Image (cartoon, rainbow, N blue to C red):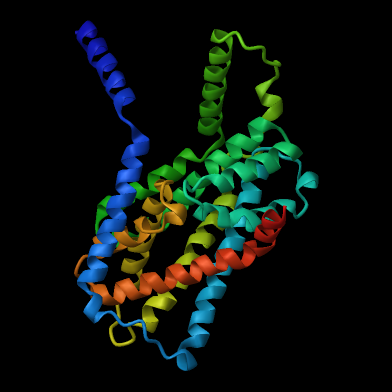
Length: 320
């Protein structure tokens, strides 16, 4: 029995190695875009982008402000994540927040990961490569956990939504420390096998997680997702004043759709994936023409907020 189990395990590992996950992600991205375009053209005759700006400019501006606020919350959360990993507070000053805001626009570059490279290089210069890499690597998981926790309010609709609380419990010092030590051990074995010279160092001196659970960073990530949702819900009610929908229902759909857009890095800024997932989950419960217009306006506003805060960085890169 043990031999049979080992054979099955080896076969499963080989099967995983043969799967090209990069192609799968690209296919999912293309399918999402196609799904969104299909419903867009299907409802094209019912879609109207006309809006009374004289009457609704204040709501659009309010949505823009909440998108701006969400980016600030995300930047503050990232600073607290880095501090939680053990960087000296004196080194950070206000540099982390400002640099995060400036580089946020890079998530729209094809590939969706270039903002991580910029932040990694920045952190590496003021700390060490290990802290820079792991704190940048884990930040999306914080956002994912915050989004899932908010989506768990769907427990009022079904008990299965309780499962979305579980990822949050993995954000503790012991589990994260074990994972990071495992990665470091694997890296050391690889370096040893390749006979590459490496300066020895103590892992504990590079990564010093300062508390058991990152309450402050996690709470601010929740505020980040909530601010994004408020920006969206303002756009939604501009085009849907006649009917009232359960705001918790919309919150659950928004959080799940946004989380899927975050998981698929092929989609720049989650473009297409977030919108397609929202359409898919909401189904026919809300008129599709209203959802489509709301999603498009929200995407334009949220992208404009990113561009607005990143203009100094873009000018610097362009002239350089």
